[in-house]
Amino acid sequence: MTRIALPSVNRFLMMPLLVAALSLNPVSLAPSFAGSRDNNDEIGALIAALLGLAVVGAVISNDNNDDRRRPSVDHDRYDDRYRRDPKYTLPRQCLRSFKTQFGKKRYWGRNCLKKRYNHVRSLPRACRDTVVVKNKNGVWVSRKVYHPRCLREAGYRKRR
Image (tube, rainbow, N blue to C red; front, side):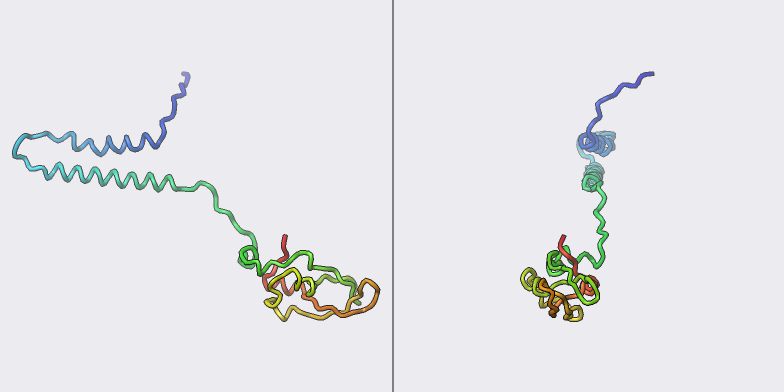
């Protein structure tokens, strides 16, 4: 037996028709009397039918608002502060390599941060340090720096 593909009826059209047919059915089955019959039963049935229509309409409306996409999941640590607050995002170019007496080490340079970062005063004092480094001329000089691990643990990140 072959199957015939029928055009699908839009549920936005089909559901109200179905609800109307089911809710108005009890009203139409009642016998009609002319004259002195009390209309309280018919009015009650009509109110119940309208209330049923409203409930079904609310359910359909709520179903239409259902978003099928999965919510995005943040896999970041530290409650994602550095994306919302630019204060916790440090400029990438300020993370520099310095030649120290213990080899090459990476630090956040304080002078660079002063030029390119507006919240230098809010950086943790516990992360600040002075290290002796070799400059371009080969002379040992002291530089004020911030330790990367300390700032990372305090919730700061480098700009991407």
